[in-house]
Length: 447
Image (cartoon, rainbow, N blue to C red; front, side, top):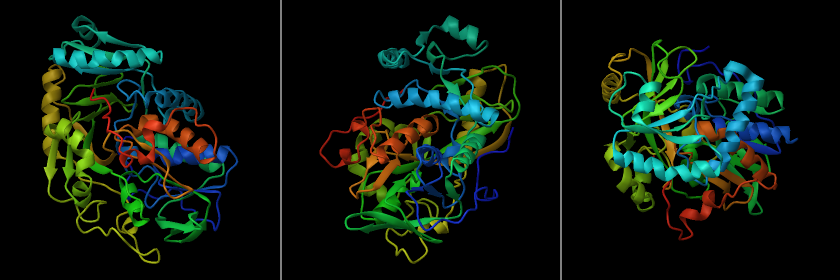
C-alpha cells in the first residue's frame, strides 16, 4: 500500500498517450469526476479522450480526506451519493485494496447542545434514504472512543465508508483505459472550438481534437477555462491542509470530525488528519467579481477562514494570471501543471494540540507528511452538473470538498446526461443557470 502522499507533478506520468485527431467525447480534467465520466462513457460505446494538463488525480482527487460519506450531504445531493456508495462497492470488487473501501462509518462529534440540534435537523434526510443514521449519547461515545474528552454526543451513519485517494483514482483510470479511453497526461486543453453555435472540438497544446461533446471537469481551474470561452459562473477556491500520521494504534476505524479536526483511518496503519472546517482563502479578481454571489456563504463561514491578499504566482485566481489567451499560444494550464500549495503549518500545530486534548492517552500525533489542496467551491456549496450555454459543452465542477466520495455517482450522471439519457436523479439543484436566473442561493448543510 502506498504510504507516501498525494500525487504531484514530480510523479512520473502513467498515461503518456498523445491525443487522437477525433473523439466522440473529450473530457477536460483527470480528477475523479472526469475519470469516472470517461469510464462510463467508454462502457457505453463512446470513443473517449481525457486530457489532463498534469497528472491524473494530481490535485484535489488525491489530496482529500478519503471520506465516502452520505451523512450531512445536501438533500438534493444525497440520492446521487447513495448511488455513489454502491458504485464504490463495485469498484472495490474490481480493484481491491487499490480502492481500499471500508464501510466503517462516519461520526460527527458534538461539543454543544447547539451542535446536537444541528445534527438532529439532518436526521429526516438520512431516514428518507434508509441510512443507518442515529444520534449517539455520551455513554455510546465512551464505548466507541474510550478515553476521549470534550464531546457530549454525536451523529453517526454506520454504513458510510472510507477509501484511499492516492491509489483509487489512478486505478480507476487504468480501468478506463482498459475500456478504451485514451488518457493524455501533460496535455493541457487551451480552449474549445465552436462551429455553427455548438462545440466542434478543442485545441490542446499537442494539437486539435475534433469532438461534438466536451466535458469541463477542471476543478479549481474550471471558471478560468470557461471565462476564456466567454462563459461565466461563480466559483472560488480555498486551500485545505491535510496530514498523514505515522502508524498509530487503531483507536477508531472510521471517519470522525468536529469543528476543530477530522480524522480517517488509513490502510497503512496511520491516520489522515485535517483541521476540520478551517481553510485559507487567497483574495484575487474573482473574489471581487463574485462577492455578491458568495455573500451568504461569507456571512456563515468567514470566522473559519484565514484571508491572504494574493495567491501564489500562476494560481487560477492569482492577480497576474491571464484571463484571456489565444488558442495558438501557451495557456495558464501549461505554466502551472499541478496546484501544489504549501500546507498551513500553524494549522497543523493547532490540529496536533486539539487532537491531544481530545485523545489525551494518544497525545500529539507524529506527522509523516503534510500537504494541501485547492478546493473548488460554488456559492451554495453544491456542484454544477449541466450543459453550458454553449451546446455540447458540459460542466461538472464546484464539488466543494464533496467530490471524492460522490465522484462515481457524478460520473454516471454526467455520462447519461451527455448521451441524452435520463440521469435518474433530479438535477435542477445543480443547473448551470441557477446563479444567473434570479434564483435565491440556498446554502448546503453546515454540519
